[in-house]
Length: 108
Image (cartoon, rainbow, N blue to C red):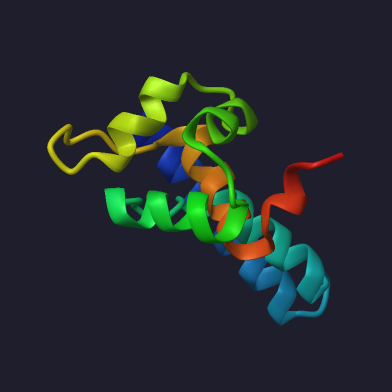
């Protein structure tokens, strides 16, 4: 499925969830879950990635990379303004989760 098609499907799903919530068919909690799934994660510039790793996760780049299931060099690139690389997809969603709920949200 292309990104454009996925975006359209997510937008339609979110619109339907909002309507169901408005008519008390969908709980506020369930609406929150659907919003979290449908809305794209924010963009994570280098300083924000570093802040999440250092202040929220309190981990080295290597350990943090392990939690995100990426290579340490990937985290280094995300944290380097010169690289122009930013986390996307699942990594961006995981960063959003850590930023909002702490690293504990990933520890099971």
